[in-house]
Figure (cartoon, rainbow, N blue to C red):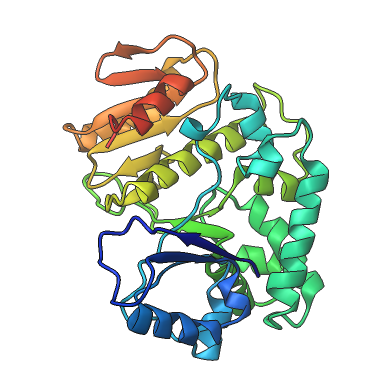
Length: 332
């Protein structure tokens, strides 16, 4: 745990008489839950302000720790995003992910290996949540295979050699420790019957690549395409979180195999993500099918095709142009 004291907090709330205006930053707060009682006291009695960070809320929940009763505002810190990286390299981001220590090196394999080991040792073993750590490690690898796919707990359980109930509890651990999240299915049915199952994503594409053994991604391959899609969704989720947007992010998949990767809100925007360098009509089938049912939806296809243009009802957008538009608030 580290504590940083920074004077002259810029908060507009006046300090109490006899106290200094001080901001206190505490990292890894979940390791000492009892400290939250002290935080509460210092906030109430001395008017201090705190930034509390940590990688898991599980220990705090189990210990019955002080939740600061409405005094705390939860925020999520995401991996690096496009505006934070000078000289952004799309292929490096697709391969290494956007965790700072991983993105900044040519080959992040060793660092990712250490990251997974620390996660298993500190977040899983120390908390005593998993009796068979080997089974959980195997589960993480199988979950990586399911990254970006519809969740089927029975199939994952069979691959891991544990029960479906155990698999559900394992996924909950990933969510509670901020390692993964779900994207729900877009469920409004107009003509076609739609799939209802959520999709799972690790919080950073580099982690999914490492767990799947995708160490040398090449453009034009299916593996690169999956990782490219993950990275774009990662950016969309980060934009939504950092800008306090409440728009639901979902995906659309029908039983007759029509699909759109991202639906924003109630069909305000539909985004298909393809790693192709030459957009063809076959890449647009999902958007066309969705548009038949939702004619007022904005349609976008994001790809590596370097020429951003409009084709009929669809915007064909080069990936770097898309990222500029996204972070300029021009998508949603």
